[in-house]
Image 1 (spheres, rainbow, N blue to C red):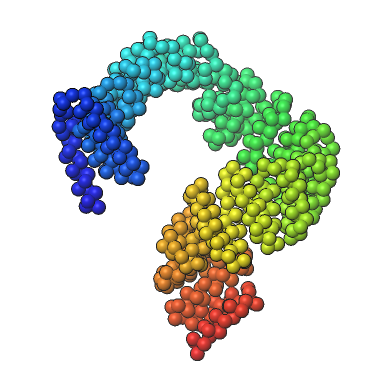
Image 2: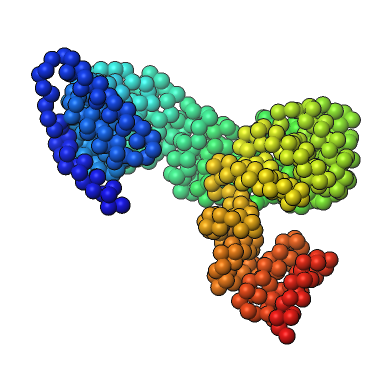
Length: 636
């Protein structure tokens, strides 16, 4: 650390003015070219050191390059970047200015210089540099907006309006940009200028929502509330897909009286957006008035009905939602979406028989029958009725044998009954129909695991990981299968493969708590990379501090490091969070570990109690019996 600090200090002294240590001699073009060649060699050396993360070394090499070729803006620009990487913004600024003094636009470096000046607290200097950028890019709106911000920061607001006038004279920015200009002008009190811009935009392109909203905001600043309401309503009419104006209008609604004229005059599609905005603002009585009006006007499409129903679902008014869906289905009996929504709503309330009736009702009409069968089957699966679900999927496949998702779900119902060969046949059919879908290969791999066909399982899971766009789910199962195969087959090479798969997963999802725990426990169980195991498990517990399995893993990692007291602390927490509903095997492992920790601390009675409790869950485990006998002998 001292050597690195000394190097930083020396570099800072050498380039205190960010200039050459010695001028070039006048020995002719050959000598100049030779010095430039040597400068390039130092520059290449610096790039290598940067790639290795040695930015102080890179600075030294670049300084040597600058001494040899003081006319190169590239060298000074790179020096500036490396100084910024070491945290020395002062030197970064000085070297950047030296590079820019060599000429050229160098916009990217100028952007960095502005950022460094702002970070250093010198907003006035940043504004000055930004003014120079505008000489090169006079039509770039983002620079004008940033410069306006810097003028505001440095007390130079009077310069904002002339700055924007200059932009408008030089170019014809799009309406959204001009609306943004007007917003900035309004924020600094230039209301009349802002209004002129907004109205000009509305005349030219009345569909520009930002102009209507901005103009309404000006009216509010002047205290003209009714005018603002009218402008927000016009904005809603001009932008039928946007919620922005509806949310602003909802803020102005203070009671039912404010809605009377709006409800009487606005069409249903505008009212729906206003109703949603009122509900989001917690103004439920007013929202109910709006939605009641929509019902009276009777929605014309299935989507309008569903949008209306969602409000009642969000407010947990399920009876009203069911009633509306029933009315909608009467109007539009061929809409698959309505039956699916009704079924989902009934399932949410655990009215499974009613949901089944809804799906069957849809099947009697000209709907997407495969989707209705699928959701009916999923409902039965949720009720732990795999055989009944499979009957539904069989009916669906008789009509739609080409639907891969139906084959997949049928396979899952076989798997839930541990009928692995039948499940594999359905998964294969799904994969044949949709070879690019990861799920059939994933489930096939899991089924092959159950049959102990490890090589085939790992191949299927690897294919699933390759096809999976996010990969994390398939990678987790691949890594777990590799680890389990290693134990089952007695082949240590699988351990390294599992580690590589988990590391690949954590590179994609560094906060996957279950992957962190699994890999940490693997290391602890194997007695390798124990410091890394503890680090992984600390990250897992930071995400789920009360997870009993994670606490047990940490206790075991500490135990394997010989830290018995710390292991006991984590072990007690793991036991406290162990739930009777946890898998019996998981509870047995925690109890066995608790016995090991207690025995290491010399508490033979506690060790015996834990081993006995573990044996109640794994009565035929000879290892546990041997551990219990050893603990009992220690107590004698």
